[in-house]
Amino acid sequence: QVQLVESGGGLVQAGGSLRLSCAISGGTFSDYAKGWFRQAPGKEREFVAAISSSGATTTYANSVKGRFAVSGDNAKNTVYLQMNSLKPEDTAIYYCAATHSLPYGVSVLYDRYPYWGQGTQVTVSS
Image (cartoon, helix red, strand yellow):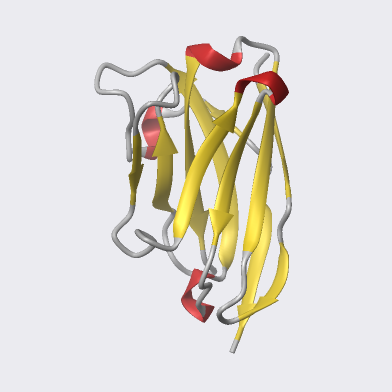
């Protein structure tokens, strides 16, 4: 019954910024670790960023480290992905996901996440 609803995708020029939002309902927000994944046409889904259930721990793919930031807001039951210095290779459908609190706080593996959003398109032009 846990549902995730995304917003914030769109078209942006290289070097620009976007912030994706993922509202979570049907469960207690602080009980779940959250992750962001993306998938470009013809390519496999890849990990982007994750945050622990408490918000104390975050991790990032090397390709986005220093440019993207994941955060959570307990009051709004929402997880965010702030994307700065966007590159054309960031173009993809972005998905948020959630799972019950993990032993090591976060996971980069998509099969550890049973709950998923519908995806939102991010397109970065050159």
